[in-house]
Image 1 (cartoon, rainbow, N blue to C red):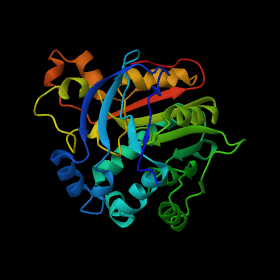
Image 2 (spheres, one colour; image 1 turned 45 degrees about the horizontal axis):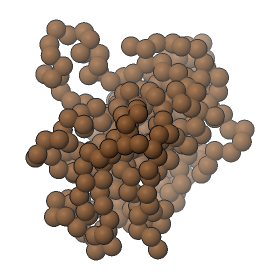
Image 3 (cartoon, rainbow, N blue to C red; image 1 turned 90 degrees about the horizontal axis):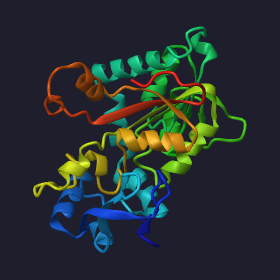
Length: 300
């Protein structure tokens, strides 16, 4: 069974020319220390030792990704065995009031695109719903919700909470809103996944895409003290295999035929509104962009 697979083509623009930003073998002390701590000893380090952790950047569009990723079999082990389902469920179901307020604001912001319609008239798909935290918030507001998930433990949790679910997008499924939170950075084929999202979005519908913010990676990665790990979340080894910036996420949306409507990254908004250097604005870990299949709405 192969441990790793290789990706040499840019998922954003399709080019195959790139340059290396960072590399270390998985046998390197820095990586083994991080992986042993992060996965609490559940990850079989010995099986990864011959692999190479690389971060590369596309020469054409600037997209950053890890070309060496876990094979399908090992990716399944990562999300079902090395990340314990019970531990990850607790981290979501016991989340803070602030986090739940953020979810409520997102639901309201998405609903504002359909001011003439009542919640039950608006269909929402939570694409890669995980433990269903967000889709439960949308359901509580009265929306017609559905969650897409492939993990058996997460599907069971959804059934226990009366969340309608699907395991893949079939022909004929269309939605007013598709919400994909922390999904595209994990998948080996973000272009194909975004294509699916676009093809199942109703005309005039909204796709809300949230990913870790990779804006500062090219600057930080050249720092001699930089190390892959918790503080480098946008290129976290094994899991965050795609690193998006505002520019590259917008470009991927355009490639699949969607138009940017608005971005909710307040770092950019503050930079435009406040008379202070951008460097003095706190870094934001997340990047959320809204796309539509219809006419252009707003580009803040």
